[in-house]
Image (cartoon, rainbow, N blue to C red; front, side, top):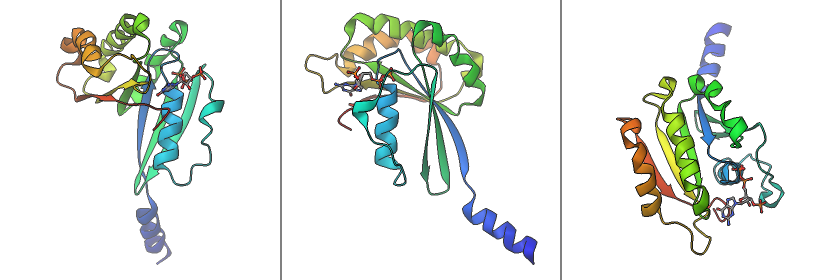
Length: 173
Ligand code: G3D
């Protein structure tokens, strides 16, 4: 009887866990996006100080619980020397969110190259991609169409995996 009740309890409160990588160059807004998402989608989240965020060095971890699903986020540092560590996390990930700073046209090609390099890793084959054109609140920022034009150079490497590009402002939500 105890085993039955304990099984029922575990079934009712089990969580399907997924691991999502948040990648992109340093200063793209990865940590701001993670913070904003947790504020909006996790009612138990106690953070919420967007102005206290500093650029990611190493790794930030976050989670969002929705019903029976737990999304675990790994926000990895985007500096050139830290990009070499991204692939250590690929095997465990169920999805990738790639953040682009739309207000910094001078680094768009650099961002595309890092994206391209990421796509060459076999362990990410078939893993869905969400590409976020961030900082759309900044006057004169690059439009999603321009960003798509540049990132389309990687389309053969994206292949048949699901990929969606979305304009956002992590800062304003
Ligand atoms: P990172 O984790 O990718 O390194 P951060 O980037 O989240 O640390 O953000 C880097 C800077 O960009 C921060 O500014 C942050 O406030 C800003 N930022 C992030 N998202 C947005 C956005 O949507 N709009 C605008 N205008 N700014 C954004 P500071 O000044 O603290 O360096």
